[in-house]
Image 1 (cartoon, one colour):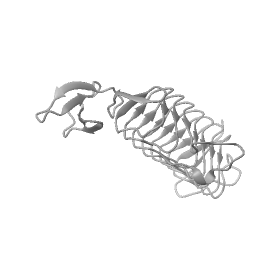
Image 2 (cartoon, helix red, strand yellow):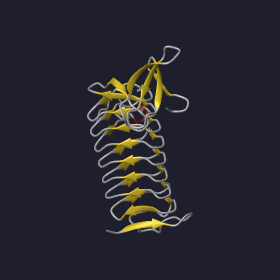
Image 3 (cartoon, one colour):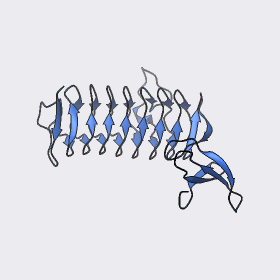
Length: 224
Protein backbone atom coordinates (compact mmCIF):
# COMPACT_ATOMS: atom_id res chain seq x y z
CA UNK A 1 0.00 0.00 0.00
CA UNK A 2 1.26 3.47 -0.91
CA UNK A 3 0.09 6.56 0.95
CA UNK A 4 1.06 10.21 1.06
CA UNK A 5 1.64 12.20 4.22
CA UNK A 6 2.34 15.90 4.21
CA UNK A 7 4.21 17.99 6.83
CA UNK A 8 2.52 20.97 8.44
CA UNK A 9 1.98 23.96 6.19
CA UNK A 10 2.84 22.18 2.95
CA UNK A 11 0.81 21.04 -0.05
CA UNK A 12 1.18 17.71 -1.78
CA UNK A 13 3.32 17.54 -4.91
CA UNK A 14 1.51 16.98 -8.19
CA UNK A 15 1.11 13.31 -9.01
CA UNK A 16 1.24 12.07 -5.42
CA UNK A 17 -1.81 9.86 -4.80
CA UNK A 18 -3.79 12.03 -7.25
CA UNK A 19 -3.56 15.01 -4.88
CA UNK A 20 -3.80 18.38 -6.62
CA UNK A 21 -0.88 20.74 -5.95
CA UNK A 22 -3.52 23.31 -4.97
CA UNK A 23 -4.99 21.05 -2.26
CA UNK A 24 -4.17 21.91 1.37
CA UNK A 25 -3.22 19.06 3.68
CA UNK A 26 -2.56 19.46 7.40
CA UNK A 27 0.32 17.91 9.32
CA UNK A 28 0.28 14.11 9.25
CA UNK A 29 -2.69 13.84 6.87
CA UNK A 30 -2.66 10.60 4.91
CA UNK A 31 -4.10 10.00 1.43
CA UNK A 32 -4.17 6.53 -0.10
CA UNK A 33 -2.66 6.18 -3.58
CA UNK A 34 -6.06 5.31 -5.10
CA UNK A 35 -7.78 8.44 -3.71
CA UNK A 36 -8.28 11.82 -5.40
CA UNK A 37 -8.08 15.20 -3.66
CA UNK A 38 -8.92 18.12 -5.95
CA UNK A 39 -7.76 21.72 -6.10
CA UNK A 40 -8.84 23.98 -3.23
CA UNK A 41 -9.89 21.01 -1.12
CA UNK A 42 -8.67 21.02 2.47
CA UNK A 43 -7.75 17.98 4.57
CA UNK A 44 -7.12 18.61 8.27
CA UNK A 45 -4.18 17.44 10.35
CA UNK A 46 -3.92 13.68 11.04
CA UNK A 47 -6.94 12.83 8.87
CA UNK A 48 -7.03 9.60 6.85
CA UNK A 49 -8.42 9.38 3.31
CA UNK A 50 -8.64 5.73 2.30
CA UNK A 51 -9.12 3.64 -0.85
CA UNK A 52 -11.00 5.11 -3.85
CA UNK A 53 -12.16 8.29 -2.07
CA UNK A 54 -12.75 11.53 -3.95
CA UNK A 55 -12.62 14.90 -2.18
CA UNK A 56 -13.91 17.52 -4.61
CA UNK A 57 -12.91 21.18 -4.99
CA UNK A 58 -13.66 23.53 -2.07
CA UNK A 59 -14.59 20.67 0.23
CA UNK A 60 -13.27 20.87 3.77
CA UNK A 61 -12.40 17.83 5.87
CA UNK A 62 -11.44 18.66 9.46
CA UNK A 63 -8.66 17.29 11.63
CA UNK A 64 -8.48 13.65 12.81
CA UNK A 65 -11.19 12.46 10.42
CA UNK A 66 -11.37 9.06 8.75
CA UNK A 67 -12.94 8.57 5.31
CA UNK A 68 -13.42 4.87 4.57
CA UNK A 69 -13.33 3.17 1.21
CA UNK A 70 -15.29 4.77 -1.66
CA UNK A 71 -16.35 7.95 0.15
CA UNK A 72 -17.22 10.96 -2.05
CA UNK A 73 -17.17 14.51 -0.68
CA UNK A 74 -18.77 16.91 -3.16
CA UNK A 75 -17.79 20.57 -3.73
CA UNK A 76 -18.33 22.90 -0.79
CA UNK A 77 -19.18 20.18 1.73
CA UNK A 78 -17.89 20.90 5.25
CA UNK A 79 -16.86 18.08 7.60
CA UNK A 80 -15.86 18.99 11.15
CA UNK A 81 -13.09 17.54 13.29
CA UNK A 82 -12.93 13.90 14.41
CA UNK A 83 -15.67 12.64 12.07
CA UNK A 84 -15.82 8.99 11.02
CA UNK A 85 -17.28 8.37 7.55
CA UNK A 86 -17.59 4.65 6.85
CA UNK A 87 -17.44 2.89 3.46
CA UNK A 88 -19.65 3.87 0.51
CA UNK A 89 -20.98 7.20 1.79
CA UNK A 90 -21.52 10.19 -0.52
CA UNK A 91 -21.77 13.67 0.98
CA UNK A 92 -23.54 15.86 -1.57
CA UNK A 93 -23.48 19.63 -1.93
CA UNK A 94 -25.35 21.25 0.92
CA UNK A 95 -24.32 18.71 3.58
CA UNK A 96 -22.52 19.93 6.70
CA UNK A 97 -21.21 17.67 9.44
CA UNK A 98 -20.20 19.25 12.75
CA UNK A 99 -17.48 17.76 14.98
CA UNK A 100 -17.54 14.12 16.15
CA UNK A 101 -20.19 12.89 13.69
CA UNK A 102 -20.35 9.19 12.78
CA UNK A 103 -21.77 8.08 9.40
CA UNK A 104 -22.31 4.32 9.15
CA UNK A 105 -21.59 2.17 6.09
CA UNK A 106 -23.66 2.94 2.99
CA UNK A 107 -25.89 5.52 4.67
CA UNK A 108 -27.35 8.02 2.22
CA UNK A 109 -27.62 11.80 2.04
CA UNK A 110 -29.73 13.58 -0.60
CA UNK A 111 -29.93 17.23 -1.69
CA UNK A 112 -32.97 17.43 -4.03
CA UNK A 113 -36.54 16.64 -3.01
CA UNK A 114 -37.98 15.75 -6.44
CA UNK A 115 -35.15 14.75 -8.79
CA UNK A 116 -35.65 14.13 -12.49
CA UNK A 117 -32.82 13.13 -14.81
CA UNK A 118 -34.09 15.49 -17.53
CA UNK A 119 -34.70 18.48 -15.19
CA UNK A 120 -31.82 20.47 -13.71
CA UNK A 121 -32.54 21.44 -10.11
CA UNK A 122 -29.11 22.61 -8.98
CA UNK A 123 -30.69 25.85 -7.77
CA UNK A 124 -33.04 23.87 -5.52
CA UNK A 125 -30.48 22.05 -3.36
CA UNK A 126 -31.60 21.88 0.28
CA UNK A 127 -29.06 22.12 3.09
CA UNK A 128 -28.69 19.27 5.57
CA UNK A 129 -26.87 19.74 8.88
CA UNK A 130 -25.73 16.99 11.23
CA UNK A 131 -24.91 18.51 14.62
CA UNK A 132 -22.03 17.63 16.91
CA UNK A 133 -21.75 14.08 18.19
CA UNK A 134 -24.63 12.62 16.16
CA UNK A 135 -24.45 9.05 14.82
CA UNK A 136 -26.16 7.74 11.68
CA UNK A 137 -26.52 3.97 11.34
CA UNK A 138 -25.72 1.77 8.36
CA UNK A 139 -28.03 2.11 5.35
CA UNK A 140 -30.02 4.97 6.89
CA UNK A 141 -31.32 7.66 4.53
CA UNK A 142 -31.37 11.36 5.40
CA UNK A 143 -33.84 13.26 3.22
CA UNK A 144 -32.44 16.70 2.41
CA UNK A 145 -33.39 19.87 4.26
CA UNK A 146 -33.33 18.45 7.78
CA UNK A 147 -31.19 19.12 10.84
CA UNK A 148 -30.09 16.21 13.00
CA UNK A 149 -29.58 17.39 16.55
CA UNK A 150 -26.57 17.08 18.83
CA UNK A 151 -25.78 13.52 19.93
CA UNK A 152 -28.86 12.16 18.17
CA UNK A 153 -28.73 8.53 17.10
CA UNK A 154 -30.28 7.37 13.81
CA UNK A 155 -30.88 3.60 13.74
CA UNK A 156 -29.73 1.37 10.89
CA UNK A 157 -32.04 1.54 7.88
CA UNK A 158 -34.08 4.48 9.21
CA UNK A 159 -35.40 7.13 6.81
CA UNK A 160 -35.25 10.61 8.33
CA UNK A 161 -37.78 13.03 6.80
CA UNK A 162 -37.90 15.80 9.42
CA UNK A 163 -35.71 17.56 11.97
CA UNK A 164 -34.39 15.39 14.81
CA UNK A 165 -34.09 16.74 18.39
CA UNK A 166 -30.85 16.65 20.35
CA UNK A 167 -30.18 13.24 21.96
CA UNK A 168 -33.12 11.59 20.14
CA UNK A 169 -33.02 7.89 19.23
CA UNK A 170 -34.72 7.45 15.84
CA UNK A 171 -35.79 4.27 14.04
CA UNK A 172 -38.15 3.12 11.30
CA UNK A 173 -39.54 4.26 7.94
CA UNK A 174 -40.27 7.08 8.24
CA UNK A 175 -38.08 7.52 11.31
CA UNK A 176 -39.80 8.17 14.62
CA UNK A 177 -38.35 8.86 18.02
CA UNK A 178 -38.29 5.71 20.16
CA UNK A 179 -36.13 6.96 23.01
CA UNK A 180 -33.18 9.11 23.98
CA UNK A 181 -29.42 8.55 23.83
CA UNK A 182 -26.57 9.78 26.00
CA UNK A 183 -23.45 11.49 24.74
CA UNK A 184 -21.64 8.21 25.36
CA UNK A 185 -24.01 6.33 23.04
CA UNK A 186 -26.19 4.48 25.58
CA UNK A 187 -29.97 4.50 25.63
CA UNK A 188 -31.12 6.74 28.48
CA UNK A 189 -33.24 5.29 31.28
CA UNK A 190 -35.88 7.21 33.20
CA UNK A 191 -35.08 7.39 36.94
CA UNK A 192 -37.95 9.57 38.11
CA UNK A 193 -38.30 13.32 38.51
CA UNK A 194 -36.35 16.11 40.17
CA UNK A 195 -37.65 18.55 42.77
CA UNK A 196 -39.38 20.59 40.06
CA UNK A 197 -41.21 17.56 38.69
CA UNK A 198 -39.00 17.33 35.58
CA UNK A 199 -38.16 13.84 34.31
CA UNK A 200 -34.57 12.72 34.98
CA UNK A 201 -32.81 10.33 32.59
CA UNK A 202 -29.63 8.42 33.38
CA UNK A 203 -26.95 6.94 31.12
CA UNK A 204 -26.41 3.30 32.19
CA UNK A 205 -22.87 3.39 30.86
CA UNK A 206 -21.50 6.48 32.57
CA UNK A 207 -24.10 7.46 35.15
CA UNK A 208 -24.47 10.92 33.62
CA UNK A 209 -27.92 12.43 34.11
CA UNK A 210 -30.16 14.50 31.84
CA UNK A 211 -33.39 16.46 32.20
CA UNK A 212 -36.27 16.06 29.74
CA UNK A 213 -38.95 18.69 29.19
CA UNK A 214 -41.14 17.61 26.28
CA UNK A 215 -38.81 16.95 23.35
CA UNK A 216 -35.91 18.89 24.88
CA UNK A 217 -33.20 16.87 26.64
CA UNK A 218 -30.27 18.62 28.32
CA UNK A 219 -27.38 17.35 30.48
CA UNK A 220 -27.80 18.11 34.18
CA UNK A 221 -25.29 20.27 36.04
CA UNK A 222 -22.60 18.11 37.48
CA UNK A 223 -23.39 15.25 35.09
CA UNK A 224 -24.19 12.65 37.80
